Image (cartoon, rainbow, N blue to C red; front, side, top):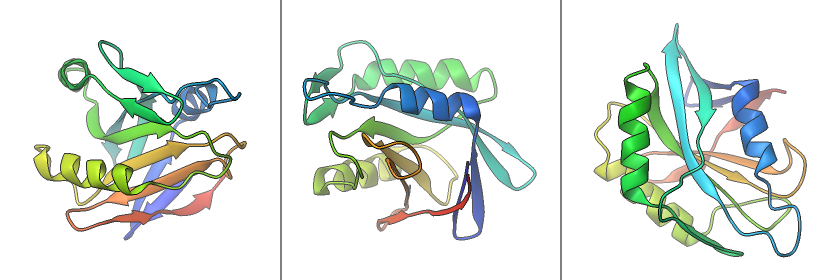
Length: 154
């Protein structure tokens, strides 16, 4: 699956898509969950290969997810040694067609500004309850805002 933002293509691997899909909140009692996205840069395309699930002391409720930032930093360091770059976060929403909340946008902008990177944009992915692509929001986070990316291939 491909998304484009300002001419940059993000290609999600089937492994990554499967990980996101398997974590959908499928029933009324399911709690939000989330993690990070890791990619390799190949010939003008950012290949999103891995969607981790943040462990450690993360807190989860039906309407919220608060990741263990130390556990996330450890994942970033470990996967960077394997040539994978942290490019953003993902989490679930208990709605069919997810959209970012004001809290989601605020957190994403804060992460973009505080992270050490050379990216023009980071990703924010929200996994909803509907089957993909309808149940997936892919947004590009810049220093100024969060914008939906355009789907190009399914």
